[in-house]
Length: 339
Image (cartoon, rainbow, N blue to C red):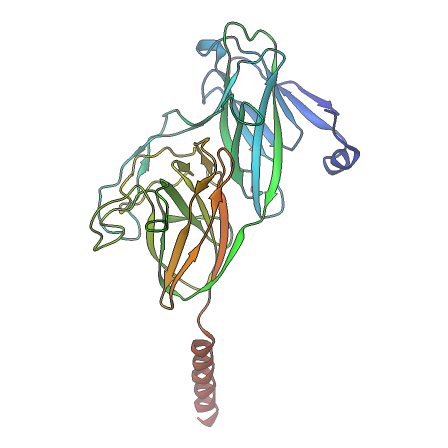
């Protein structure tokens, strides 16, 4: 693939931060499928993918395997913003289908299986967003990869350019909770938004099975019915956690757990990237946490297309528990010294 450096109208500060020059990556044919995708390594903010497509079939399918550049560990929102002198191109983030796990209570390991070799749209750009025709996903500075596809129409004879944008995200801190069982739910929180969520550990790794799209009688034993809203009941050990919350559909590379009522959602091809498929905005997504100390409610709104709202919380034993543990350790030390 041809690579050309350019200034792309960036300000002096941005140029300095990006090593003074951004990069143009030009498509090379054939790149008509995931298997033939042009690999773009270490793409940085301001870099562009440039190509040409005048159809949505055959050689008009321009596939790219995009790897973002490494960054300090954290949460980042990425966008590829598609533009051309002749509007009409469509960008999609590609993914996989999954074979559903058999339904049942969460057993710690049973999740859906990605269907290797499949190719489905996780997210499709829209002409009504601002800016128009952008695709968006989130990562953590781990050189995440996604499959990105551009198609055109008979009239889009001018080259397109897809420019990468990266914005750091600060998660909302929810405070501390007790170790053990914690229930996270959007049910009964004053709205009917079809929500979808996933929990990440302190290293921003998605935790196997710690996600829920739709509540089922298996995810919330004793529930009178299933719901399009989320209810995740899991055990937590002490540590820092992060929660991604959006409306349907939220996709990472993890198969849906067996206690989810919707277990055939789209998956991302690679770890560490997560994306939402919906352009719907201004959605109430209020939720609650319930631990051994009771219930806490939190307000949040999905403001933009494809947005994922991020939160962080810490699981910490109560001071009394820690003090009792300290007394026990001190007593054990005394007994050892007396021997």
